[in-house]
Length: 479
Ligand SMILES: Cc1ncc(COP(=O)(O)O)c(C=O)c1O
Ligand SMILES: N[C@@H](CCOP(=O)(O)O)C(=O)O
Image: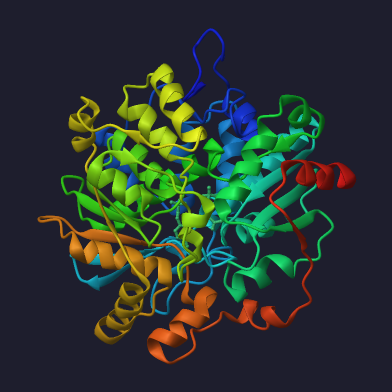
């Protein structure tokens, strides 16, 4: 399997192998990598995959995307990654061995898929634990090191740091929005004292942090000299790993492969739902992809109108689902690449507008008809909706959900899809957002035993302005 850039022409941007793009992250032309073609899954494969454990399924799906790691080694990496010991925070009564159990709220109709049972209580662990093991494997084979530069709005940071802490040849430099994450999220990251982990809080929003990551990655000389890599979903390996749980969720929510499923995805950077889009393109019977945003509704606006209008920092709200406080969604470029018929020139034209701080408008173009064929619907949620949804989920089903999952459930309920179950992806656990849970329910969320007392630990973080040169200097001083 070879990979191409969303902005590259065959002549100027030669295709790459999986392991090269794993270490490289963003493409040199500023685009994002995607497979040359999406591998297809046959009916016979679906029938066979239905019985597989999560680790076996991960191996089956990832083998379609990775042909430069020997199969026995890839299998060992999947087996080591996807265990009930790593994903140990399943709800009582649900089977941790399923890794991403389906929890029915209404049998056969509405379910949560538990994606947040890993070490940091968010869905990011699903891919990040794999990335940690892949990095370790590939770096050891090549005798290389990597300095990961990432941006987080709350969950990618801790998931990456937990996955990479103590890993040989790996340093992590993680940018977070100063003062905008929950107290628990801050404690998860800033309390880590490992030598290879560096936290930088930038005075700005996630989008400012993500812009810095892209600017540093686009400086080819700096990137090569300091071996800069990525763990955000701009890294294709993140998206590839996230495709797996759509298959697992589909099998868990259906009895046979003639059925369809709707997935509802709390969205910000568009990585999670992009994985769902690709699973669907591979042939997984997904009837609808329901995209849910919080008050930062850029993506909802696009799917409703055809206008993509990223907001500036000053127009981005700080909300009670802070991990979705994103107004410029990186992975949306991957989807638009498919939408415009995989035409890199068109993507370059559209992103020239985005990168200049402007909107693009697809109304009145043939792309709007094509958009309808991709099976998306969307909606948005507010703080009041979030509180009401957390309350009603608790009172109706006895299930406590976090603020992001609440955004998903709210939008899923507003967009019922006839004839198929809807699976809402549970993207974090309530323990991470105790302030809002208290406000909604007047009680504390349960904190898993292994993470109790985290907020009392000493914290270590460098605060700085969102300045690319300052971040480069910080990295230079520590490499
Ligand atoms: C808890 C949670 N929910 C939802 C999202 C949005 O996911 P994505 O950025 O992949 O759209 C994030 C962050 O990415 C998150 O941390
Ligand atoms: N919501 C994320 C933001 C970054 O998303 P990613 O999927 O591109 O890493 C976070 O919580 O940090």
